Amino acid sequence: MTAAPVTRIVIVGGGTAGWMTAAALVRVLGSLPGLSVSLVESEAIGTVGVGEATIPQIIGFNRLLGLDEMQFMRETRATYKLGIEFVDWLRPGHAYVHPFGSFGIDMLGIDFQHFWLRGASIGELAPIDAYSIAAMAGKAGRFGWPRPDLPKSPLARLSYAFQFDAGRYARFLRAYAEERGAVRIEGRIVDAVQDGQSGFVTAVRLEDGREVAGQLFIDCSGFRSLLLGQTLGVPFTDWSSWLPCDCAVAIPCELGGEDVPLTRSTARPAGWQWRIPLQHRIGNGHVFSSAHVSREAATDLLLAHLDGKPLAEPNHLSFKAGHRARMWEKNVVALGLAAGFLEPLESTSIHLVQSGIARLLALFPDTRFGAVERARFNAETEREYVNIRDFLVLHYRASERDDSDFWRYCRNLAPPDDLAEKLELFRSSGRIVRENNELFTEDSWLSVMLSQGVRPEAWHPAAWMLDEYETRKGLAHIRAVIANTVDQLPSQAQFLAQNGAAISPAERLAA
Ligand SMILES: Cc1cc2nc3c(=O)[nH]c(=O)nc-3n(C[C@H](O)[C@H](O)[C@H](O)COP(=O)(O)OP(=O)(O)OC[C@H]3O[C@@H](n4cnc5c(N)ncnc54)[C@H](O)[C@@H]3O)c2cc1C
Image (cartoon, rainbow, N blue to C red; front, side, top):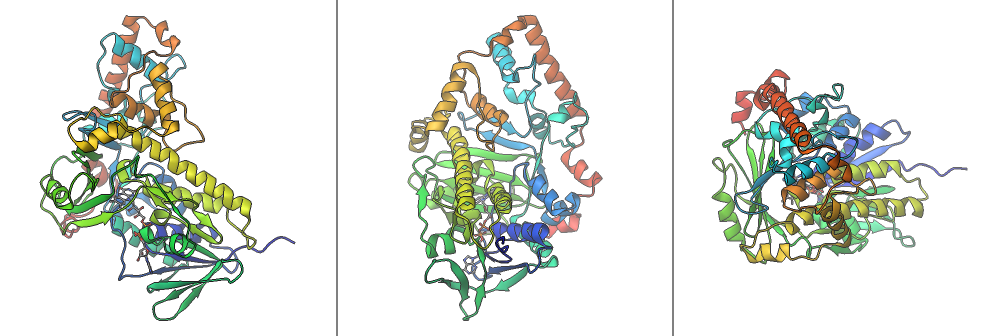
């Protein structure tokens, strides 16, 4: 006899993580006989209210839900994102784009960077992002659809994501999930009821005495980590020695400055500032290390670098880089901030929610709550956190900045082992190895390493097969094709209007 499926699911928390989870569960498991998905949240507590930049994987999540992209964009006031522009990270005055999609073309069957490296050695000085359609279109403020059907066009190598209003995204998903049967319960959780023998959570108790019972509990309670951290006592693995930023101050402002489909990250003396342009406003924030700058000075610096009038009071947040040692314990699975946090430098948190949901659905428990599925979930999730951590640390480690204690600390950090190995291999021969299906592709590693001054000593021997003339000609041709293609794309504003994704002037003013 097979074990019965789990059908009574309780989600604790209604931020982005909670409502993404509810939406995905009702979409995928909605026809399971007896399924009930309840979500408990407290308006009095609220959500973190930030989290506006995403990576291309979000498109897969939206497709899973069957969302209409244009409706989604209007409702969440979204813009397109073609990558992240990193300003002053290598040194003050330097800028590059870490684009989505890939660089150049594979020439003679080997990765493009080897030809770029050979070109650089003979004076071809165009930066690597000149060979990315996403970077060039992003800087020019233009947007177009990827064209995988045109393999010879640079548009075949384009990929995109969204920047959206986090509050509106959660409300949008809430409406979606409630329409399909998820039940929202308003109330503050004060306690969890546990089985005396197994320690499994059997219910959460609300302030007014109500109990919400279930078989599987998904902890989306944010930094509090109510069930996984507090009730089950799963310890936190602290990575703050590698990622010392522990605070952020966020503030939206009126539209102003450049209208480009890019998130911007500008390095500051004790951290960095984000700029996320939406259709109706710009999201801004300063992520900083409280050991290196005071909260007041960090706030002043942010306020001095806005492109428009502030639209709210500064929102202060504190955090620690790292994750819970196990994200699935007994019958509790944590997603979102309740599971862990890595600073938003590469916009990975919403993706971590999404990949956690996908992993949970793939390993969905039955009423035995098998140890093997749990172990697999925890191992894969931890690996994903480690990979992202290493990629973030690279940005700090590969900097020439020497202008503050913070940057001196960062550039002298001993990198984690896997990152050290990646850097060594790249420095030796320009090669990048992507292991365990890690989130960031070879192109992403290449982008940050080359743009932040990590220089290989050699390149693939095949790059010598083209002589100097052919190398220069090939590189110039790729740049010209990309430039021509960018010239033919509409501006992002035109694209949004032409495709029914633009909000009305009245909606813009109602920000
Ligand atoms: C400074 C900063 C910038 C960020 N920027 C990005 C970004 O650009 N891109 C990105 O992908 N991610 C970003 N993130 C991360 C992103 O904001 C979160 O991953 C995402 O919002 C998910 O949050 P959450 O739902 O886990 O938690 P929260 O939004 O905190 O939601 C927690 C929920 O739990 C409920 N709750 C808590 N305690 C109780 C209780 N006792 N009883 C009842 N309900 C309770 C709350 O009411 C709330 O509904 C950023 C995070 C920070 C801190």
